Image 1 (tube, one colour):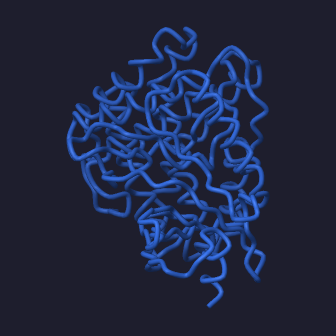
Image 2 (cartoon, helix red, strand yellow):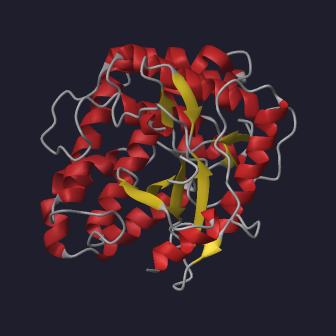
Length: 344
């Protein structure tokens, strides 16, 4: 068994158990237990179609971990565990890279925030993590997914999809296309602020969903995980996607959602996000948090609609209208947020 060969290269013996860890959207993950040493690890196959240079995410993680250690970081740090020959990445016969990471015992994760308090604690944990790594000097962190936060390209991709889409897809998404087009200028201010350097460049996590915090049994944060998307951009993106992820009262696949924005969750997340960052943020960043939340939701909606019009080739779908339902859900979320902020 080829997977067995990968395991042996890391732990040196075949007395172990492997349990799939589901929930991740990109990498293939297992809980590996070395039966002889009674030690657990995370074994992961990196999706090299998404991360075309896996060595970039490894080097980024090593740099970030070094910053955390040198700043008396209080949470646990997820460390790569080298193979028996000292390599952090091992390639299988298909050329797919594998890595092993240390495992945090007695930890739990959540796919959605179970309470306002847990949402606040998660946002506060990310706030602490971001405040710790954003020191005076930016490290040489490289972009793991080029153009991931290029909103001009996202809009151009949407317009191109709209131009070339099958007529039946366009007809079924007629209402959503109309609303999306009304908001096409929404990201303009963001794009302009970045171009004119009105907002500082910072290290961001770029995937701040609540499932990327490990909690203890009492819902106290233990660790920030999944540093694969770490990049240098604007911290507004982390706040915006936190709101996009935490404030939705339904699953993002729910195309029939009505009033799915939770204003109390918004307040809890904003308070948590500012807990450690308030003194670090520039006035321009602080003033644009509410705006950033709108843009983050809109861009996610735009990506779902773009994929739908392209025939659903990017996101995993379970039925033909899946991406359209996701689009409807995000538009309803944006509507609720804008009503709460008084933007309409």
